[in-house]
Image 1 (cartoon, rainbow, N blue to C red):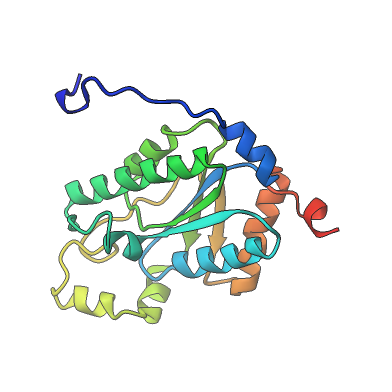
Image 2 (cartoon, rainbow, N blue to C red):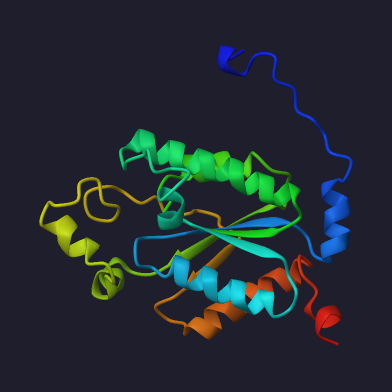
Length: 207
């Protein structure tokens, strides 16, 4: 046993995850958006949250940049730090699941092993890997922060897609091709999936 966690006991609350699910009238899941830098992860997650909010679905977006401003500000972008970044986010997302929320994460999360590590933290069906698919050339063309240009000049080491690899999901639950779909169409694609899996029930909320 890790000595750092010796004599620590998990205290179960009197209000359960199932209680919160009934209160919220939707299932709690982690919607894990993964993809290359500038593929549209954060844009899609925030637009989706807005659409779900209008239908009284309780949500939260964990964004890569935002988390590195606080919880993970001590981490860099080495393989070890990237792994720890995802581990922490996975644990936070798990707490959101326990709170009964639909939590969306927008992280490059380039390693399959790390994404599967998060999947193992929660129950079956509570982790949805959503591959935000966009060709590298299109991501470079967008480059809203100028990161690709800096990476090619050697100013940013270990940059995914240029000097560090991205492992494409082999069997994601959902694929959204943001170079082919408008933002509204991408949102609709995710919403249809959530309805089909009965994670949300829009008909009941909109009548």
